[in-house]
Structure formats: C-alpha cells, structure tokens
Length: 280
Image 1 (cartoon, helix red, strand yellow):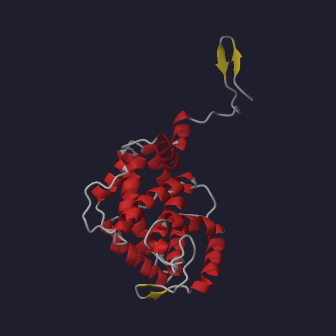
Image 2 (spheres, helix red, strand yellow):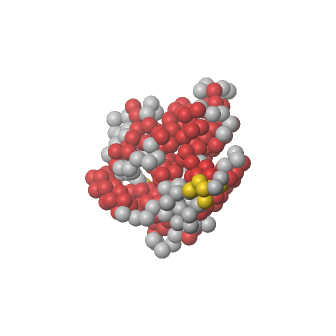
Image 3 (tube, rainbow, N blue to C red):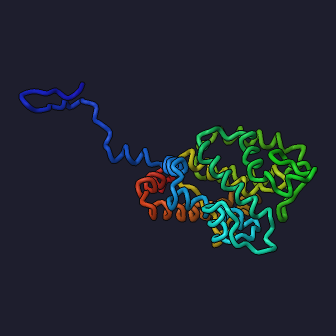
C-alpha cells in the first residue's frame, strides 16, 4: 500500500514500501565502473579515468621492462604525440603503450562481458598489434603460443595443451564466487599456463582490472614498490596452493593505492562501496 492524503496531510501506512534513500541510489550509480565509463565517454581530462590510464599503463609496462618513464607515458596519453623521447628508445615500448591505452578502454567498455578465450585473445591482439613481434612468422598475435616458453624457474604449459588448459580454467572460474581470492587464483593459473608467446603479464593484469570492475571490487594497481612482492607471491602460490597470503596481501595493497585515487578525485562513496564488496 502507498501513502494516503487525508485531512491535509500524508499518512504512510506501516506496511508501505519504503523508497530507496537518495544517498544510497547515488552511491550505487557511482560504482567504479560507471565513473570510469562516464569519464571515458566524456573524454574528461584530469579525472579518475585519466589517472588510471596513465598509472596502470605505465606500471604494467614498466615491470615488464619498458623504458618509458611515467612522465613520457603521461605525455603520450595526453597529446597523442611522442614528445622528447631518447633517440634509442625502443619503438615497441611506444607502440605497446598506445596499444595498452586502447586495451584499457576495451576493458572498461566491455567489463560486464563474459570472460572467454576469444575475449582474452582479443586483449592480446590489441596489445601486440603493430609491434616487432607481429611481423615475425612464429609469433601469433591474438592467438596462443606456437613455441614453448618459460617463466623464471617454471616450465609453462606446452603449446599443444594451452587450449584445453585455458578452457578448463575458464570453466572452473565460471563456477566460483568471484571474490578477490577467486580472481587472484585465476591470475595465478593464467600466468602458470602462460598461453601467449609474450604479453602474458600485461594481459593477465588487464583481466584482473576487468573482473574487479565487473564484480564491483576495488581494482588492483601493481606499482614498482610492490613488484617484487607480486612476483614472489605468484611464485609461492604456484609452488604451493596453500601459500596464498603474500599475493593476497600484495593485491590488497594494490587496492589501497587505487582506493586512495578514488578518494583523491572525490569518489569516496564508490571507494566505500568497493571496500564493502571487498569485505573490509
């Protein structure tokens, strides 16, 4: 039953359906994904989307060996020009940076899509398009590796078994609760499979971003100061499934960095909602 107007005043029955508080509605509308998508569509400069593109791209490329500085990454994103780069700067560092900006846009605009083999291959194709690798016959851009590869001391899945291992991983992931730990477990197995010839770390972290946005979790920003903890955590978890704490602590630190960015840009409600979803 609804409110009744009687004798010049509104009377609200005890069993009337209560309206949703405006503050709660506003907070729900301001999820991290919605903020990023609105700012991306509006081409807003100087906001959360702008900062995410620069910081996420710089850090994800830097820990893989890119020589571009944070300032150079910012310049390329903001001006779409090269600016004053070192004469011996590898061309691929620049190409993969611009590609990574496109990949982040793809993740934001398709975050709610199902995570599939084709989706993951699409991210790889965007990242490696126009690179030196893309002109090599043995390198499969947007497809699984053709040659064996290794990660440090670990042997990865052989090329012939990649499709079946990825299909199994995605099937099992689809049945989980999609908590931060579930997403972390996916990341560990994805990096252990190492399905592509190159670019696995960056594609893996793009998937982390997508799934955190999809399930309203605080995104994870792996910065230089936690890089070694990130790699150590991956290694420990891959060796022993029960040794999850280091990587989980590292991911939560990465979430804290992103949450600070949210609050810096005035999105405290979104940060609080994400914290609740994270279980903090």
